[in-house]
Image (cartoon, rainbow over all chains, first blue to last red; front, side, top):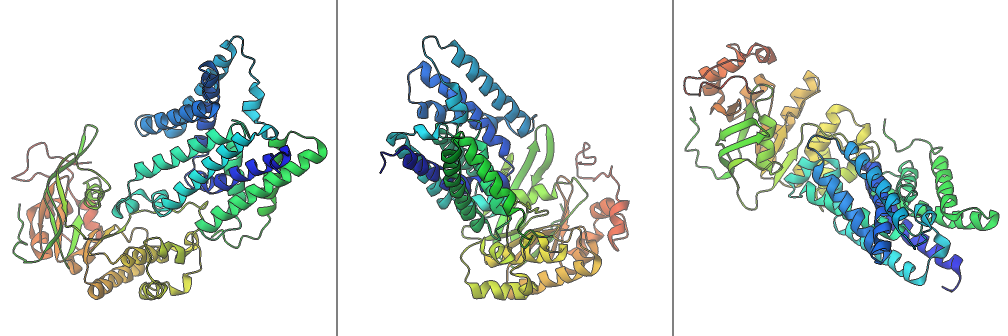
Length: 264
Length: 256
């Protein structure tokens, strides 16, 4: 069954969507959309470094994504606002990555593959890594769920319960870096934020509690993956972007749902 | 210091010794030594920028003091009602889910608490859809569900109208009697403070004076801060910014 590239693509996409849904909810709740961008763009630098030192792409991307995220975390709250630092980190890392790739002599790098991903080229090993990363992220979110929710709502309230806001922020950051690392081959650096945010945004209108929003986001992501694969197979369109288009369509549909749960 | 509340014989839940907090070069608090004993109602009063919220944050463990020590008696649960809690519209949250956030209190207990604070009809509503008074009650219920030995409230009636303020304080008083917890709050409602507190701490970067309401309202330090009339909130606008205490150091001008 895994011999079929479509089946592998579908399974990889589903694995990714499972973790991206709940994680994407936190991205939306904490207004970290730009944070996802920064980590994802840093991933391009990771690709360049991995090729230079002939490391696994996953290792290089994970390392640079973590590095960029924690650098921003460490510097934030001093003089610059978080989004300023993210702007510096995101574009700096992306530009540095592109320059570094161009300097690689003798290696022909298909950069498009890392900017937009190629889900149809997913190997069995990629598949195993995606699921491992995804399940690890899900497990982390499950274990820290209450603390993460409280810290997201109010850091002082969380502190009174004995939770450390900084620590929980780091956990989310690490989860984001892991997801970016396993997602880069599938959807690419430019579309990672899309798979985090769009399914979660679509889920918001349909949910009454944080938990139902997380589950709905994961399911919406899975629908976008399967729908995107089907559409791209039918009309021969690029698969990653097609999945995003389907997700956007689902988001548009969800916003037609009567505002039963949106508060005043 | 005119600390006249010693020898109450009650166990201290949390106390500080020589606590100071600096943000950068700005000194917010210095040499604060206070103690909250069980079953007491303690109110912190002071002008804007006097470090009231910072002191609460130190006591609940959200802010590490730059100097001094904070001792929380082991096993003491603290229920906290923050000054401001904005729940992002992006997060769907029903009142009943909010109440469950604090822990695995049985459903019956939640319903009882919701009824106790007067929000039982709203359990299925979104938090973002509540009115100001209902929202504060929901915050209080959540804090109480953790069965705290100490309930900490930071200006809990901010933004409420007069009747809502009065009923919120009555509610705090009655649940405190039922649950037997101590209450520590920051408040600008001086008349309420003077009526219902056991102990008042007057703060302005340091503890200006403390004691029973009668003692504090007669203290020259308090009168210097809030003016001579202590009737109502108008006193707040009359306080002198450049007050001096005979025992305070000469640099002690307005703290913020």
